[in-house]
Length: 369
Image (tube, rainbow, N blue to C red):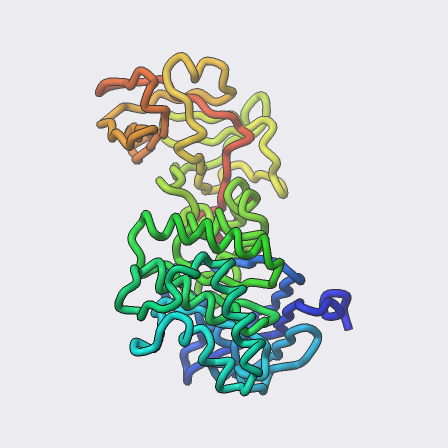
């Protein structure tokens, strides 16, 4: 047994595969989740993230592999025997019950003593700021309040693992932001292992200890949010993370006097200092990626190692920031700047960025170079 399995609240998935006939949804997933870790499963619709969560919960049939929770092989155990609490996108509250009864109902069905039920409900209400709402019914609550009740229903069970399946998707942007903070605070205070499914990269980057970015039933990259953001493992991860998205310039590698050079039409980008993972390979077809917020314009570009001359098409104000849409080597190239800066007008502009912020991807495989 590994050290990971020896820890009480750890989760281990080994060779997990889920297939429905000829359609494979999960492809031999191996994953360790540490005690007290907040792991976010991130990816587009159909990537397998909810299927993976359901496999941990015991809500779906797996084709191959094993699931361990706290060192216990729960592969064939029912959800009620896995010591988990689930929070779904739909609140699934009992409409005729008060908040208090919604929180207590599951414990009543388990024949937990009334005094203990009252104590657990009171503690959950305190943590989630539900005390003023305990005698209300779901119809009298806002969307955010209903979702807090749904979280509380899982919280009263004193479970080892919390599983969240896109719990904020039905809320407006303001409520999502508020409840996201509450979930992060809840994890900090409880220290319980949590797995959270979302397609929202903001939720992933702000909540997670580690992010697992998924595509086609495969984990493309598993790392801390800052690492996934700064050093995407492949072209898919680079394009999926970031708002606005990363700029991509298709081109090729050449050998210059001072080392490798990227060429896209008439644009030459020196790559001295770029941490290649193997031989660059002159003539190789690649894409250069740079995030809009890492590009500087005008005078601010003067001290940058890489300088290019895009053409401004339009400026999009975004409150504190502004997005400058340009064209470089015939491809869209966006720059995110502080709205208080002097914004460029339509036409040529000088832009610069550091080589340390550049990502290079092989055109054929999409892998990071």
